[in-house]
Length: 218
Ligand SMILES: [Zn+2]
Ligand SMILES: [Zn+2]
Image (cartoon, rainbow, N blue to C red; front, side, top):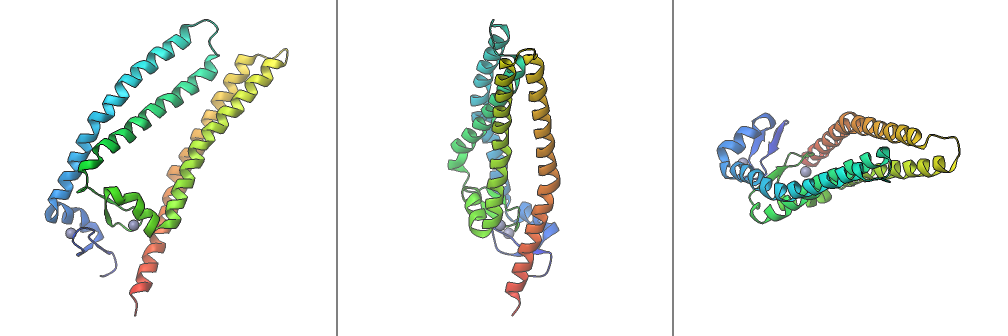
């Protein structure tokens, strides 16, 4: 295997990296087809979960706006957005689960070594072949979502503290703290995922290549 060539995960043939897409399309059309079919199959169960949940969510949201004695909007809007995000995430997971039975043929490309891995074994591949990267991804996700909980808790504390102090406009302070928290979170998260993360992945990939090259040398 020369430099810039990778092993096809299906037939083991060495293929120039740039040619891999063509190679898959011409040599293994059934796998490409299975992938297309998988994408189609996932849409239906996804909508089956998301559409009714979204209707319930919308009614709850309108009730929240209309009811007297509702919590301040500044508190309820981020909370409701989080719930909406949760609905989409759960719908996606459900769709993946119910379609998993007929996806044996689907292979996903490993982000580190470019190998094509059967979908059910995709995460196991990261854990086995790139354990450090797998841990990094889990940690990065945990921090991303865990920090929203921290923002929410800080917001609650701000709310309770200001409501106990006299002469403070609770609604104004809570609104400011909610939105500044959200914007800071969005800023940090997008900086992370679009700035730090790609360069980290590039480093992991080049480290992996170096380790493979040194393995091959006699
Ligand atoms: Zn092949
Ligand atoms: Zn890999």
